Each structure stands twice: as C-alpha cells, then as structure tokens.
Length: 359
Image 1 (cartoon, rainbow, N blue to C red):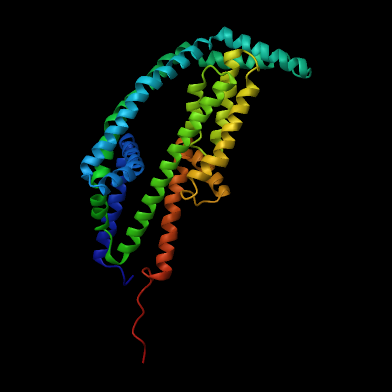
Image 2 (image 1 turned 90 degrees about the horizontal axis):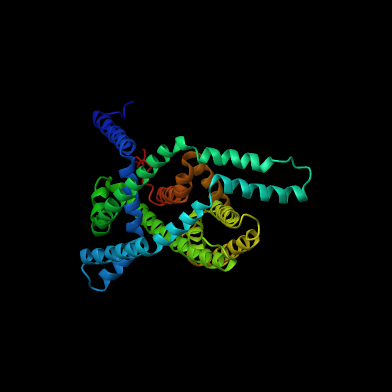
C-alpha cells in the first residue's frame, strides 16, 4: 500500500479511460477499424516497393503515389476484364439453380446411390435437397438477401475510398507515426518496444505478401487445371479456391467441396467429379511442395499443430473472419512474448534495482 501514490492513481485512471474509449470506438465504428486494419495490411505489402523506389532516389511521397497508382490500375483492369467474366459464369450457373433442375439432379444422383446401396431409403436425397432448395429460394427472404447485398456493396464502395487513402499516409508517414507512438513509452522500455514493433512489422509484412502471392498462384493453377478437367466455370471456381486457400487446412477442403458441387450442377451427374478432384489434388500438391516452401520459409515460425488449434479457436470466436486473422494475431503475440522475455533475461528491465549492500 505504501507504493500507491496519487501520481500512480491518476496514471491508472487515465490509462483505463483510454482503453475504455478505445474499446467503445472499436465497437461503434467497427467498419472503420476494419478499413484501417486493411490499410495497414496493404501498407505492409507495398512498403518494400516504396522503399526500393526511395533507395533508387525517388522522393518517398512520389514513390508511394506511383505504387498506389499502379495498384489502382491493376484493380481497374481486374474490374473491367476479369470480374465481367466471373459475373457471366455465375449468371450461367444461377440459371441452372432452378428448383426443378435441382430436383432432377438430386433424383439422378439418388438413383445412382440406390443402385449401389440398396439399403438406403428411397427419397433420402431428393426430399432433403428439395427442402433445402425451397428454403434458399423462399420469396420472403429475397428482400433480406437484397438488403444484405446492398450492405456489402456499400461497404466495398466505402473500403475503396478509405483503404487506399489511409494506406497512402501509412506508407508516407509510417516512421513518423511510429516515433510519435514510441514517445509515449518510458525510456527504460523504449528499446524493447522498438524491437517488438520492428519485428512484428517485418514478420507481418512478409506473411501478408506471401499469402497474397500464394493465393494468386493457387487461383491461377486451379483455373488452369479445372479448365483442363472440363469445368465450364473454371475461372470463378479457381479464384474462389485461391481465396479459400488463405485459411490453412480448411481452405483446401473448401476447394474440393466447391469444385465438386459446381461440377455436379453443370453436368447433373458425377462425370466431372473425379477429374475436378484430381485437378484440385494436383494444385494442392503444387502448393504444399512448391509454393509454401518457397514463400513461407521465413514468414512462418509456428508449429503446424499449434496453427491448427489457433485456427479452430479463431473459427469458434469469430467464424471465417477469426480463421483469417488467427495466424497474424498469434504471430504478433508470439513475437511480443518472445522479445519481452528476452529483454527480461538480458536487460532486467522489469526487475527492481538492487539496493545498496548492507553493513
């Protein structure tokens, strides 16, 4: 009790108030917080390119502008060239999703099962699939679906405006922002804090760049091999497989399931299932034997078993979003704990100074 002073009480109250205000901002403006996080991720991905331009003599502000302008051009190309193709493929797929067509496909598949497994009850697949389809195509849910879609497009439009704008300042003034934050840290913790921030930024930047390139390579490979397999919607499925692959362990399973479902919808039977599964298997072999060793040799430093449990915890906590952010968050925590522990053992910054020798 003797160590409690008015100064410590005031600092504690101020710190607690800052934490409460921060949590309230995160809760009430979660979309803006997500946009800022996306902007930080984008700045981590693009920072090496800006640094290279700056090292070659280009002014940093001009370098940031050139890099972001290039990204905007690439996104513009994708939106005008790739997205219309995907939209057409999805429209064609949607025309095949009528209730009657779904019922006929389920009947044909059920008959194939009944021919091989006589113990199965008649109608086991048709009745369940028809009930699910009726729920999905319920007219009463159309307004809700439209409202959700409008909300998604509104968020995307807002993200397109906010994320590049915020990323510009993170890239341009990142070092200044870091210095301003470190001024709040007591001197005896300064070196440890600086090292923790530097290692976290380097590791996250490497991780996000690796994940982005891996997703691109997996999407491109999936598109190529699914096209060879004969899938009509190979591009849209390939891109979906690439995006799903950002989730370790579970992403490949989603890729198999999606390719099988689309192949059945396209053909109405199992004729393309084996070929599509073989295509995804080849892509996964490429990913495990080539892409991951090449890209993640330096960016991952967590045991595979730990990664599995971390992803499961993320899924239980926040669904798909939790699965996506579980590994980066675990990386941040691991680096912080490791560096603080190292500083504790070497600098003894958390220990009380020894008193004068007695007698």
